[in-house]
Length: 153
Image (cartoon, rainbow, N blue to C red; front, side, top):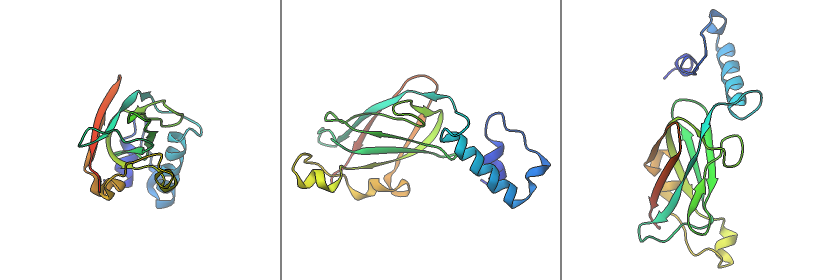
């Protein structure tokens, strides 16, 4: 998808001949990204929560999950608690995510937590990148709940 197609797909955006130059396109993307990050505007977000567990049913404690939108430059992040539960936030903690298609990554707890013996689990490295995780989700209007199952190394 070209830059102009991505910008044109933003709800409420009207394409204008002023945006024909590359510099203008890059500037528009920067402005839209800044708005998505909470610097001058806000998309509607919807609650997203869920659990991250290993295939044996054990919860991922102290992990981080990141959702990256496929069609617009926006992401949401959350952290798992001792039960593997998480709530995503986009511009504020726990405010949810914008409706749309997402890819996701899951990373385990920081190494210092593992070394201290506080968190006994680690996530397979394939879940660290959007290209290899295989995790995709559709966030819809309303409340969203996802049960995510990951593997150990």
